[in-house]
Image 1 (cartoon, rainbow, N blue to C red):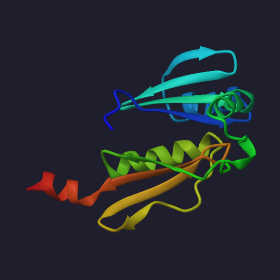
Image 2: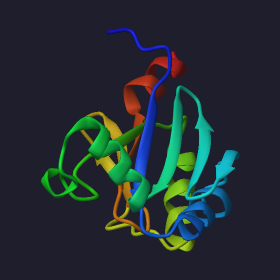
Image 3: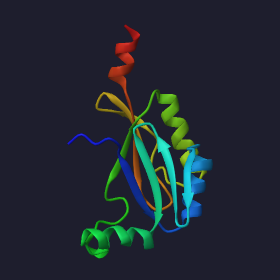
Image 4: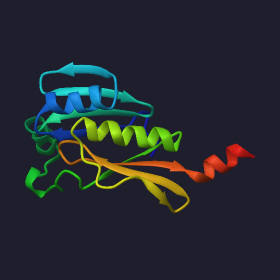
Length: 138
């Protein structure tokens, strides 16, 4: 499989609240806004926030009962960060914007890692590879 683009659609309970979290809190730029949905363009990823009612449209189209799907937080969105400082900054911004940061970032498996959840419980993993840092230092 070689997709041309990757799009992640996250069902949210309040599109406006979640838009503020990602736009104002994390500094992501809104690329498209329409009734019940908002889109953000990240490097290599389009992130759509959609109301739960619109999410049902996808499950109906796929022939899946929405009740049979995992709840929010059942997947992890992982992002590689350019530095420990950037990673810490994103965690601080997420927390200040109403997200949850369960514990401070720390070193783990040759990387520096931290986690936050958005207001709907979608889990994000931020990773800075200490291997990348060591390679750049040589």
